[in-house]
Length: 150
Length: 150
DNA sequence: CCTTGATCTCAAGTTACCTTGAGGTCGCAT
DNA sequence: ATGCGACCTCAAGGTAACTTGAGATCAAGG
Image (cartoon, rainbow over all chains, first blue to last red; front, side, top):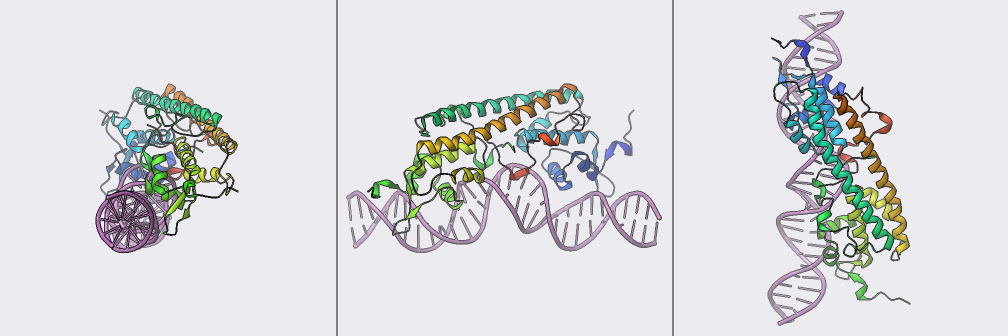
């Protein structure tokens, strides 16, 4: 029934403009498998309009501290082929919300422990509990997911 | 009065062991100006015992999302030459605590906005306010400070 | 004295996330 | 048909935060 017409797809430049990311970044996301495109006869990329939303989601998720690989995992749960529905996005965002909650909690707890250590002035990681293995914020070094904040 | 004896200084291996970081990381921190050392006649580094605390602070600050450059700024306010007092550490940690508070606040606000957007399912960055310029979490890309969380 | 583990320097590699540049093609308005 | 901006690919560069490796020296116990 629904035929795909020229108006259903957008160029990489349009996608970039509508989401505010650089064209090079869009190509990068595609290379990483976060978004997909079809090609014209002249080998140019064409994206679905719904990919604007997809890229927007990537940006939001990044700001909330998810790594691209994690974002990819989330996006992979979207239905293939068809444009995601509002419900699809709600489900995915809900799962993300839980991750965010955890991160905020961990950060808050670590802050509290810092306060303790500051209170006594010791800063000793053995006496204080900042190094408590069970409650660490991550020893992933330069490799783990990171939160970008001002 | 107080003469510096052999027992006041520690080797890079000891510092690494006491703080849990790799020897190479200690060298890296020194290169970046976060810690300092003197050399023995045989060109080996010798650190002050108080540098254990200094490195510990670096680790904590990193976990709370500060970049090494920011941590350096904080550490630079410590008195030169003498071992920092409890008061010194308290002051520095207090200033850090404020930064953390801000980050947690921003994260919480962004999460709230995500909820809104999810609520309506639009995910449109123009209709919703996740892109509100005045309240962004940072567009620093791969360059800004990041929070490492599990 | 000699061996062995700890250090030293310096260069290059790693991961995440992109950007920049070179050299070449598409596609649409005039 | 032509010009020019938008695209294409592929390689290389850039930052943060380190690690790894090579080749050489130190330092301390036996």
